[in-house]
Length: 253
Image (cartoon, rainbow, N blue to C red; front, side, top):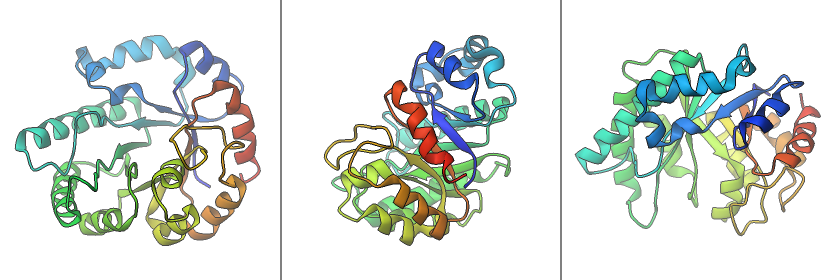
């Protein structure tokens, strides 16, 4: 498996406690909020002053902005706003020396025809990546997807080694009738990053890895079998379930 991160879904105090004795990366979520990016230097100095030495020499991932944005939008102003926000978070990632950024797919089946979504997305991502180097990996995350076909078509259409899929297994389990194992098998090496959390297939509750109806150990074996060393983020809401979830992953490291 590749690099391991924990999503920064907790208070700073809890994050400090989590990091003090663990060699693990952090997936930063606050730069995914427009009001943070509106601050001077996109909120970077405030974040650095709060986190201090705790993030030095640590693998960092950023969750990109997604609220009210869509890279597949037909509206030029929405598309422009999306491009601006994505470039802002990329600039922050560069300054933090982050490894990767995860962006939501923003695909809504009841709104977009698949063909239009794919065409618009390919155009957007080609433009976004045109001036980017290979230092930061870019991943498109499934959210409300019932199937994976359009994600494959976008990644293949953009045809850039720096763009892969972030498979969120919790989202797949909750919103899709396709078994998570089949997502892993079918996407294979197109998966560059994985979001790990569990649920009971009804609601996106971001439970610990030992909770929910998914056999996480089984799925991790399948990831090892079908994917090419993807990085992973533990993305759970309960701070007290972090340690047990990390222990699940440690069995495979």
